Image 1 (cartoon, rainbow, N blue to C red):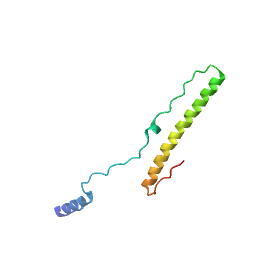
Image 2: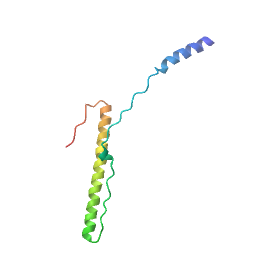
Image 3: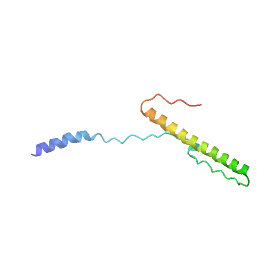
Amino acid sequence: MRLPLILSCALLSACAGRNEPPPDLVTPEIPAPLLAPVPVPDRAVASVADAAALLTDYHLALEAANGRISAVGAILACWSALGQGADGCAEEE
């Protein structure tokens, strides 16, 4: 009864693997300016022209924030594609 138990322990321990440390995790490098928050426009509104200028400032800030999000998404998509065997990512101009 002990012999099958000893043999099964010996056979199963061979599947445990070698005591190697896990591989180091590598993450994509996201440039710091892409992670910085976009400042909220601050402008005093005294007239309709000031309100229009403030609305334009908000629109530009929103475009900047969306551009940063898109850039981070492109970096992550490229990183994911490289992990799946792609040759590289083309730089957009």
